[in-house]
Image 1 (cartoon, helix red, strand yellow):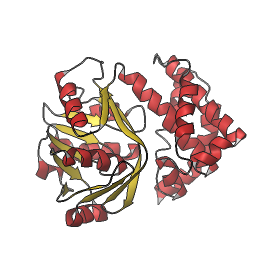
Image 2 (cartoon, one colour; image 1 turned 180 degrees about the horizontal axis):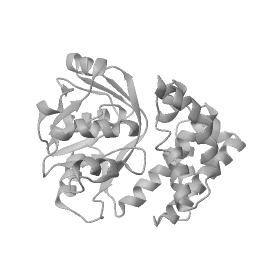
Image 3 (cartoon, one colour; image 1 turned 135 degrees about the horizontal axis):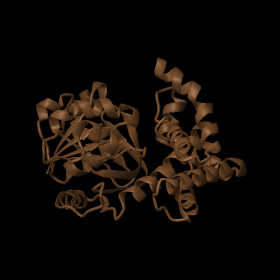
Length: 308
């Protein structure tokens, strides 16, 4: 298949690299020093599952020069989505599938605003990865996986084709029986991990071992579960315990990407994670005091980062 990766960070770089490694034509949309390094030395992926290099790699900052592809994988930060979607328009034809691998619950909505409902799937991924330096992706935690599907949960030919490409590239992937459930399960994990990690300013092993911050995390999870149920998303009642078991299995030194951005003074996904819980909770009349504490504690720093 012919792919474009919009956002060649930890997510896009890893999964796009695996697809390119398997022989698919993959165009990496990147910019700045990262783009220059990929063009000069290829895309390097250092992974706990085995290192590899894509060299040469198709890399550009001009989607119009790539043209229409069969599939676009979107791996940008949530606050970059609107601009990235506009820039990606030359990549998308009537038959192109657009797969968001974002951390919030409304990534598909943002893409539908630009491309319409016909092209867009729902999707989530799990991976601990980041740009280690220009041209180099570091995958340091979790077995990488992708769950995706049509927004109406039908089993389509195009979803099957994408599944075949991903699995054939060695990616653990599946078509969700209910994509909303999959998205909200990921949202419970990432919003809790990111928020508690950012406000405590320590890696996951430290905050999950401290009774007070562990209790804070459990409160975050309970609030998101109540919000999902209020919105009609049928998450199982034991999802809090299930998500805590995932958190407990993460290597203790790992931090979440939103946490790293906040600690580095960069704009972050605060609005799409803890901020989204507070905003959606107000609409659904669901109390979210733990997320409100985290959100408003971090908001002044977020506003300062965005003003810079």
